[in-house]
Image 1 (cartoon, rainbow, N blue to C red):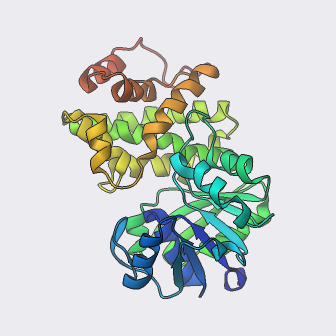
Image 2: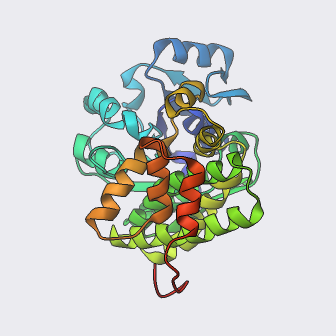
Length: 338
């Protein structure tokens, strides 16, 4: 492991659970991490109580983290870790554009597609603040478990191998293992596409189905993630890794998953609107489902599971009927055909 982490000054853009958990990982490698919150009240509360009670309750913030709502948080940062949900990313970046420093590399940890633009987070970042070195961090990594120091493995991907290795060094600890990749598109898409399938995992749970059903979902869900991911410029092998099958598994089975919880509650009779009012944070899979369906149609890729999720979310399709329609699709070969 290199010692570059000891020389880095990192600003974390966002005060959600994932940004807070990663700020903690950074602080364990570095004595000075600044976390920025859009809300002055939230920033003051986090700084004084040393806890993110809204998004990550019960986890004490490292003394190496300073929380602020002041834009000068980014003035002297060597890197900026962006942990803003896709639904708010463009607005937040636009309001902070002049403070984000020209040329400073970004590490994006956002796992969603913007709608209606259908852009990945890194594409939104470049569109709003201009081109710069960019890395993507993704993988099976619930914030709650990362914050508690549970062993976790993720992947840092960038077209710039030096930047990917820099992020690897910056974040690797004895409890947080970072691999590298040169496929940022596939890595970023894996983190986004799996959220739609996570909603499907919740539907399976809410309908009372068992392990057979969940295994079928994971296997065929991975197949459609890979098809669409390749069509959008990612590499197939990326979806066999941490950002693909790894994140898909944890998102579909974990009690922590907000997207999975959306599907479970809808399957039990709640409306989407009611569910979203009750769940803290942003279930990225809801907006991403719309984007995925449009992208698949545009690229002539079949995504039957994700399409049924979208129908349940936005067309009031009965979840049980959606499952039945998937099970009675025309018979096909597993490997050579979609």
